[in-house]
Length: 300
Image (cartoon, rainbow, N blue to C red; front, side, top):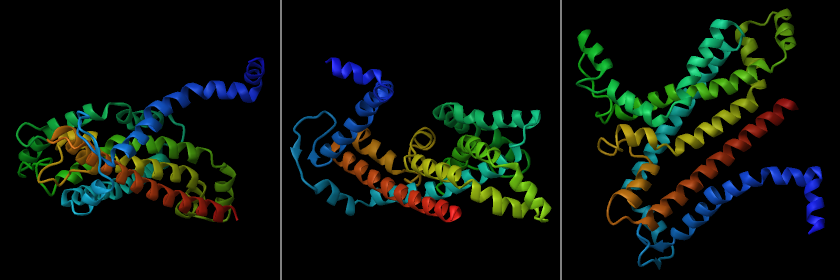
C-alpha cells in the first residue's frame, strides 16, 4: 500500500491521478456503451430488453438488402462530402481575413464563432421558423421581390442543401478559430522573404500558408468529417428525415429503428451503429494517413 502511495507522489504517478477522472468518464460513457453496442448487434432484442436471443450475423446480413439503410448511407455521404469542404474552405478564407489583430476583425471573430457556441437544436428551430413557406421571414422577402415562396425544408430537392448550408453557417466558426491560430503561428519572416523575392499574395498563400497549415487543416478536416458522418440534431429538428427520406441519415435511421418505430429492433439498430462506426474508422484512418504523408513530405 505504501509503495502505491509513493508512486502517486512521483510526477508520473501524479499525472495518472489527474487524468483518472477523464479516464473514468471515457470508460463509462464511451468504452462500455461501445462494447455493449457490439454485443447487442448480434442479438435479437427490442428496446424493452425482453426475450433477447442470439442471432449471429443475421442483423448484418439484413443490412445488405435493406434499401432504406443504403439510402440513409447515401444521404450521409452526400451531407458529409458537401458540408465538410464548404465549411473548411469558408473557414480558411475567413481565417485569412480575420487573422490580423485589429479591433474590427476581433469583433468579426466573435461574431463568426458565436453560432457554434449556441445550441444546434435551438439554431435549427430558429431556421425552421425563418424558412417556413407561409410565415418565414426569408420566404416573405422572396415573395416581396416577386419570387415564389420556396419550401426549403419540404422540397425533396432543396431540403438537404438547406440543412447543409445551415450546418456550415453554424459550424464554420469553429474551424475558423483553429485555422486562424495556425496562420498566426507562421513566422512572419517567411512572408517577408517571399515579398523580397517578388512573390504575389496568391503565391505566398499557396506556397507558405497552405503547407504550414497542414496540421491545423488535417485536424479540422478529420473532426468535421467525423461530426458530419454522425449528423442527427439539425435533421431531426428540421425535416425528421423527410421529405420522402431524402434527408434521412444513418443516425436518424438508427434512432427510428431502435427507439421510434415498432417493433423497436434494438439489435438491428446496434448493427447499423457498428457499420457506421466501421465506416467512420476507415475514413478517419485513411485521412489521417494521407495528411501524415503530406506533413512528412513537406518536412523532407
